[in-house]
Image (cartoon, rainbow, N blue to C red; front, side, top):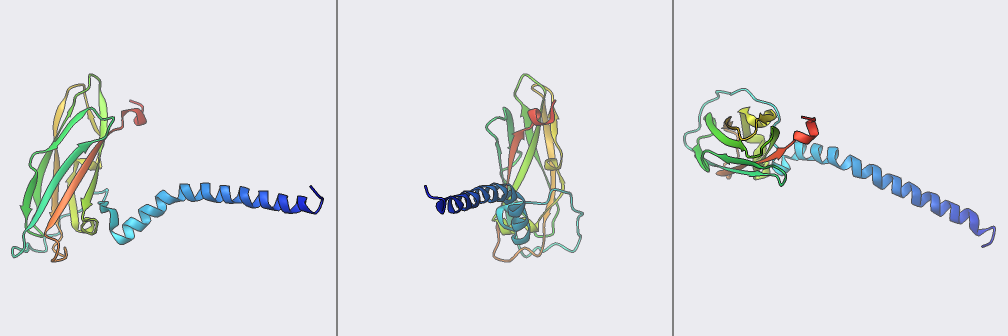
Length: 180
C-alpha cells in the first residue's frame, strides 16, 4: 500500500464510521418521528391518551355509525380480555358507555396496560374517549377479574363516507417493567 493511498483509505473509513453513527441515530429518531407523523396525518389509528370532555353540540340522528370492538392480549399476557359486546350502533355526537372484561389468569399479582387503535386510521381523530380504562394501568391480584369502563362519542364532523369504525385494544402485561 502506497503512502498516497493511506489518506484515501482513512477518509473512506471515516465516512463509513460516520454513516454507521448516522444510521444508528436515525434508528432512534424513527419512533418520535413516526409518532409526530401519525399525529399530523391521523394515520395508524392512534387515539388520544387523555380524556376529552363531552361536547354537547347535538346528535346527528340522520346518520348511524357502527363501532366494532376487538380485544386481544399480547403474547406474554396471561389474561382473559374481551368486550361486553362486539359492536354498537351510535349516532354522531351521542355518548355511549361500554365495558371490557379482564381477568388475571396467573397465580401472581400483575399489572396490565391496554393500548387502543382505531381503524380506519383517519377516524381516530373523530373517536373521542371521555373515560377509558386505557388511560391507566390495571393492577389485578392473582385470578382477580374486573369490568373496565369506556365512555365515548363519535364526533359529528366524522366524514360522511365513514359508517363503520373498529376500536381495537391490545392488553400488555407490564408487571416486569414497573418493578412490581
